[in-house]
Length: 161
Image (cartoon, rainbow, N blue to C red; front, side, top):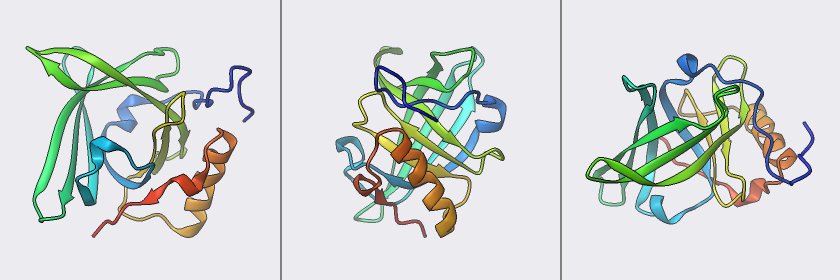
């Protein structure tokens, strides 16, 4: 998979959102401010809303053992491939004002893992259907990251118990 001329990451050719919906475990991420309080057991649950948008519930355990969760909304930007989405966790009177890119740049054919990126490469995640990925699969995800201009060393493994 070669990078595009504009140097953006390349998304997968198609995502079946019916298969994508459900529980995902965070395997690794580029550290970011909005997940600063998360120390372990980070998950995301995706489900369809009646209007075809996707409900997103992110949860994690904090240092003091509390569960922190936030509910957001995802919408498909590229309806031909379903591989470019936007997410929002900020809502004022039910209106989502701030949207962030959520590009699926890697996806296992059986939907066992996914690699998520953004056009500016400021954010990135490796997520999976199970709490752990074997070493070979981790290497596969790192290759996807490298092909898309990410440095896998920027990613920090997430503690899952």
